[in-house]
Length: 174
Image (cartoon, rainbow, N blue to C red; front, side, top):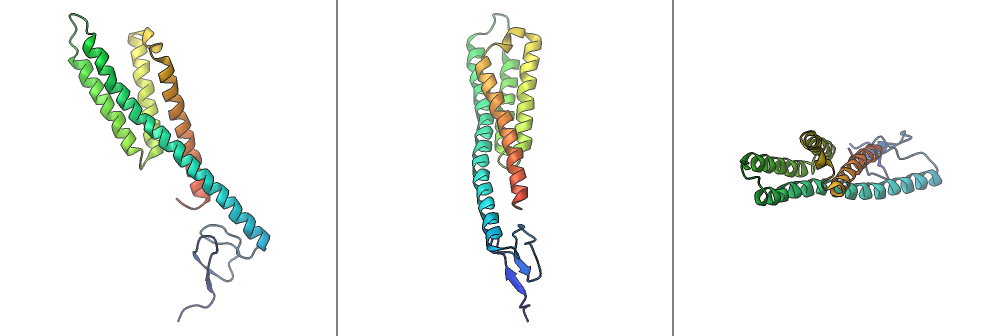
């Protein structure tokens, strides 16, 4: 025999007992006034819209990892056509392909673990350019605008992931 005191939350459709003041799943004020319930739903709708916007920002940041992979691979064109006369470019080609594959892997991994992939991608990107600057300080200025844009996208993406995860937790979507 089913318990007659069980109802479903108007906000998230989870079962609750008649004595519950708030939904245990979403925090909806079950015993609140109509005004309190309407306010809760409107606030939740605003957060859901914010969540959609943050998901788009995270996706753009994740796409920057694809761009880094492509730009890294594209840089091989300059290496192949501008080698020094006595320089063996095989090491440069191999490391460039490995780096490009690493960024591609991070971009794919970012679909499920966005925060970890973006932080790893930013760290790897910065490490590469810091090491390049140690060997040849002029490389810092080479393509500086593109470097700054990529770093900004990754940092904004990390911030968006943090904000998105916070809202997901507030909405009990985790």
